[in-house]
Length: 109
Length: 113
Image 1: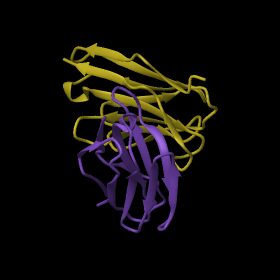
Image 2: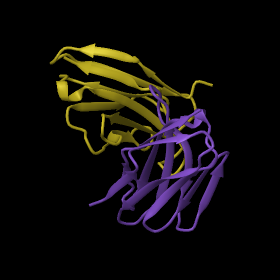
Image 3: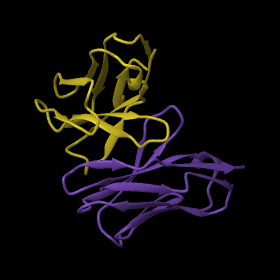
Image 4: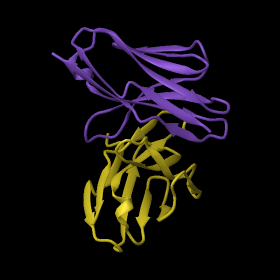
């Protein structure tokens, strides 16, 4: 069965304390893996698409990486404005999109 | 630059009532989607429209119908609302398929009592 698991469910960090969020997946034929940021009361906002193992993408303090079984979203020296829920989604070979439940990130000033 | 606009933002329905959630995008996107988001669960696809004139069922289509009115608009209809349909509904669009960046609306918070 295709599935996406994100961990941890919630993470509290001090401002400046770097960490990583995990997205592990089991799908038949990965076509793409997507990271989104969602603020309370808002729709998800696109961050990255990764297509193949070894690929990396960066945006400001965020860096996404991909292996054959999981993806990491690395947050370097986070700021309070990075607080949000981060969603991971994968696209299987049948084009089905599966979302994880998300990681709620809270950065303390 | 509005992006994806959903109306209404909030709605309370009584069991058995019907309503239509509206979605419009101004980015000339071909593909549009309706998702629901429930606490403790990932976003789940209700229906999608790969291009104007086509619609397909997603993971949880029961109790819903959709209309791709034109390239810009994609509506979701609840014919007879049930408490299990209490959720936050998101519309999204992308240029062509999910591999192109998808943009989401602000969501509609629906409560069925």
